[in-house]
Image (cartoon, rainbow, N blue to C red; front, side, top):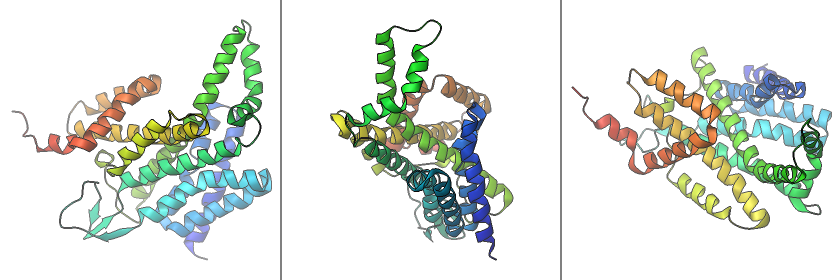
Amino acid sequence: MNNWLIIGLLAGIASGVLYFSASAGNFAGMMLASLASFPLFVAGLGWGLPAASVGTGVLLVGYAGLLGPASGAGSALAIGAGPVLVSWLALQNRPAAATPSAEGEVSDAGVEWYPEGRLVVWMALLAAFGVALFVLMYSTGEGGFEAAMTQQLEPLFKAFAAQPNPPAPEQVEQFKSLLIAALPGGMSAVSLLSMVASLALAIAVVKRSGISLRPWAAFSELRFPRWSVWVLSAAAIATFLPGLAGTLAWVVASAMFSAFVVLGLAVIHGLTAGNPLQPMLLGLLYMLLIFFNVVVCFPLILLAMTDQAFNLRSRAKQQPPRT
């Protein structure tokens, strides 16, 4: 039996176990569930697209039996679509060009590999597509998506109103409106960040294990294609559209905003490279990102867009060292 088949089967089982960790209902379980794609990424990057596809097939069959055909297929694809797409794209290569491109492709032995930045952008669009399908599915009934989510989240709203010192009814209604309005974008952002975290861990594992099917550039070299900023801008403008169109645009914009936060972090890594204070600076940045994420995210997005326009990292490398 081929190794990729065994690895795919094991990766599918491991992903299923991680996903169902969320049923524990605690923080640790939720964190493990968010990394459900990790075994599939390892399988795909270490043994190729067939291994990732087999693992996703295991999830599809298992979840269909446990959750039903529709819910099972949705859960399996939410976890497995990213690894399958990345496993296919990441292994694309071509003869290295004489002049390096602006997207930071890593080259090895005269071969140029698919750029990591494009992988992140495609994962962002994939995350947005999955959440958009979820929104459309729950928008078919009377009252649309908002009514459906209000019904689904009613136990949470009741618990919120049943606290020892319950808030005023108008505050409960305000909480409902804010939560439901933010939910599609939040799901899209979390979906992307979960995939990015799983991919980063998988890359570290396959590199350290010596089983990677391709070389990988440093995180500080991450760059996005030029068209990504136009997708972000168009989606951000479209969020002002009324109704379902605005909600779907918010889904895409949130995923792209999150992708540019990741790019902004890569820019910081690149600009501080070689600085003896880099570990302290990065530690402070990530701490601020955890506790004040909304405040920190917007400067990171602006920094990422500025770097894309003016190539800040390359300019910083060209500057002569201070004496």
